[in-house]
Image (cartoon, rainbow, N blue to C red; front, top):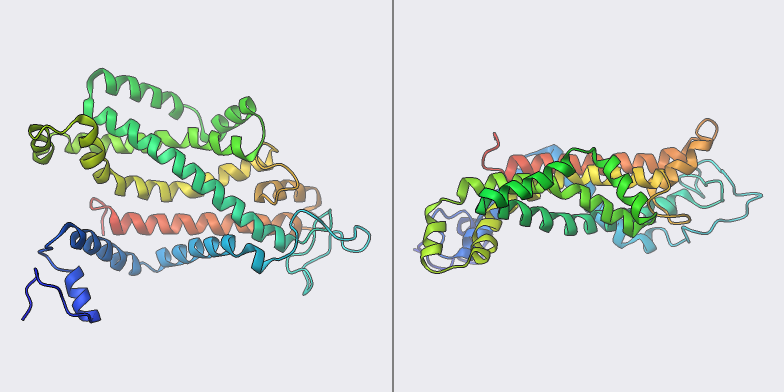
Length: 312
């Protein structure tokens, strides 16, 4: 008979019992057990699984874009015979005004969209986490200064502020990523600050101070990991907004520049033909809708599964 502190047999039942043990014998077991419980809770939510399928599908489409749609998304065919063709077996989503296959452009646009989302998240999340945990941990004038700066960013609608930054930096996908990141971090900072203020006087923080740990070590070694789950949930919920903001900048000509297959720019091009050739704008618009909905569903599911304060 094995105990919770002994390795479990290499069977599914044994591994499951090891993951669900109430008395983990190591940090690794505790982390894996927490992750597995979260996965079980997420799996019970059908809508969250639909969202997960959409997000995973987006990632696969972005990775395999050259295989799924091997054509050139930036170059079109014969303008005399292949311009503005309706959806058919030859062109599943039709062609645009430059005789380019819309299906190919939508597929390659998924890669561009995923790159924008990944870059914005990788930039905005550390900034928000750093600002929020620092303000919540130190308090006083540090908290006041950092939160007033955060309030300035929060005072403007995200799209308007992003437009201002892009107008100052110039159009382009790189500048659009910077602008969206600069408008996304304040929400994460507010959330991280609130989480930090609830744990900064905890016993384990006091014990770390007594052991001589520096403020930086306490922040990044103890406080930030505890704030990360809530921030990750918020980031997932905000991904739909990031996609819509990027599409909005592209629609206004301030994001990715032609002939890049950016969904917002494709919608802007298709609005001229919306009455007679509806598919030119509808197909990239449908892609924006499906991906945004998928991230929202996944974010709601993660909130229910991972947030200990959320109602189950």
